Image 1 (tube, rainbow, N blue to C red):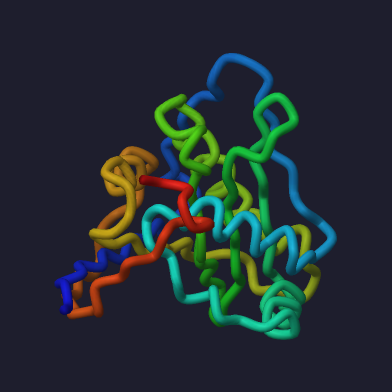
Image 2 (tube, rainbow, N blue to C red; image 1 turned 30 degrees about the vertical axis):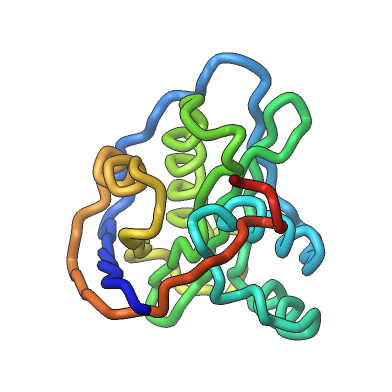
Length: 188
């Protein structure tokens, strides 16, 4: 059985497009995971995306994770609430001064707590100043991302509120997934 999945691509073309969300109250820090770690990145990927059916990286080998994370201009920024990972933003520099927000999201227990808007704001700002941390990269001229109908119900609104503008929409059929979440029995 298959389902229709709508994918929306959004962008900002100037740092002035970013409309930041204030930091929520409490002990929240956003820190760059400066040492590429396939184990940690896979944990973040499966913990954030398990219940919303992220599957594209689940079959990657350790070496494939290493290659992705070692690419110049790839950064992972992690939000911690009271010392516990709450979510992350993964950035990837691309040709011509584009930076893609490849992954962004919160672990389910941290959703609905006003962390997502702030994390997206922070991650987008880091996409705009990415070349300052990576000598030899073209300065950022565009930050873009995509979201789809399988993502959380507040994802699109968060992107629009942060100043992203829709530039493309596609609809494709995908096999219906019965993914159990980050591990069997986690949701249900």
